[in-house]
Amino acid sequence: MKAVKKLGVWMDHSIAYLIEFTFDSFERITIESEFTHQEETQALAKSENLMHNKEQQQLSSYYKKLVEVIKDYGEVVLFGPTNAKAELLAILNKVEGFGKMKIEVKNTDTMTENQKIAFVKAYFSEAGV
Image (cartoon, rainbow, N blue to C red; front, side):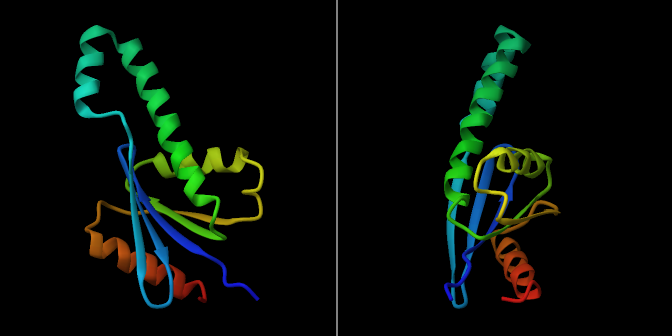
C-alpha cells in the first residue's frame, strides 16, 4: 500500500509556507503572492477599484499556484492567522479531484519556521501517521 503524502500549509494573503511531512525530514517550499505593499500603494493612488481588481487577479494567481502543488497530496492541513486558508479551501472544493482528499483548516497565530514545522509534525502525528 502506498503511503499518503501529507502537506501542511501555513498561509496568509501574501505568502504560503508549504511543509511536506515525512517520517524523517521536512521538505519546505515557499510561494509568494504577487500583490506587494508597493503595488497596493501605487494602486491606491490611482483608485480603490483598480487596486481591488489587481489584488483579486493576483490572489487568484497565488491560489492557482497553491492548487497545483496541493493536488499531489492525500492529506493537507491549512493553517494560519487570516481567512486566506478558508478562501483556498473554497477554491479546492470546486476543483475536480479534491473531493477525496482529506483537507482540514486550523486557525493559528503568526509562527516562526520552527513553530510551523512543529505544528505540522504534531498535527500528522496525532492524526495517526
